[in-house]
Image 1: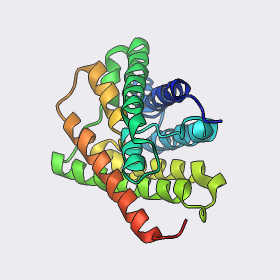
Image 2 (image 1 turned 30 degrees about the vertical axis):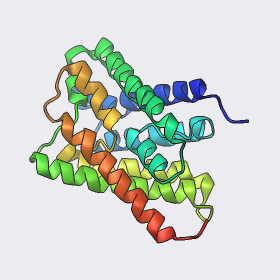
Image 3 (image 1 turned 180 degrees about the vertical axis):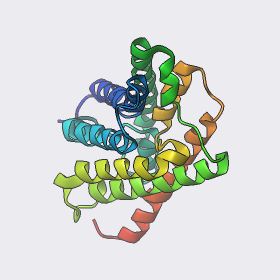
Length: 220
């Protein structure tokens, strides 16, 4: 029996809140504790929380936790179009909730969780597209292609998230997720570069989904 939409939305909201708290939140905690967590540790935290949540909730909501993923699944007929907007509301709401919890615990340090370019808007935009392309390409493979090893889906996706943050973090903060960027930006009141993260990750996700769909061809 399909899981009712309200329960799926609750899981999406909780999942994104936890991704914000443990992912970018690890950078906030590191700064608050004098650099206790290295860049490699922050990348690992981002990947591990996504992996854990997919294992825990993939069978409930599909474990999108990302408006770009939801959009891409719907665009290529792997998700009901009428559920896209409710999923987005839950995802963005969860991100704001996760960022608000960081603010409640660490105050102004939450601005460390705000994504922003370090070498220019163009560089950040391109790397966000590329990183999210890779993420969605892998998601399409493990989530929609019966030939891929389904049990390894969470591991594969978590590894990609960690890799993307490890490599792209110093340039664009390694978002790959409009909700993950919007939550801290809204709570911190820092919206200057938000447009990059609202446009580039969905674009990269759509390109990744389109490419995998083309490569897969008629195979189920």
